[in-house]
Image (cartoon, rainbow, N blue to C red; front, side):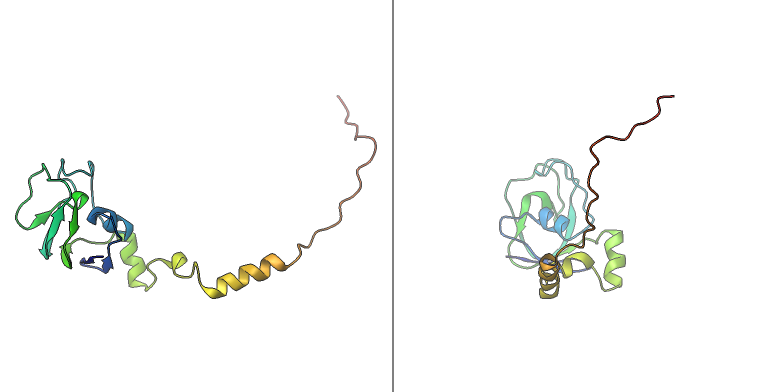
Length: 138
């Protein structure tokens, strides 16, 4: 697993994940089209580190640029990439992923178990009459 540092956060790539997949997963602002190194749309500036290309890119890249769609880092890297605007606001509030932080917490699991064990409070149904109600035709 490689450590990636952007302008906003640091994160680790999952096994078999390209840099673009990791940037998307963590909410970074990266444009892309081909996911194969053909168009060059996803290019970002690499500040430090080294990458390995899974496929040789056909798009032109400068010496300080990389195509995250078809590369994986070799060790720790730093890149010039920002989080999406709405995530920057959440990060400033200290709540980057508010729902996911507590998704598997013990408190929620206990609350769900208690809720499931309670019997639902239902009102008894009125018995259906033998004759259906009649409606005036006109």
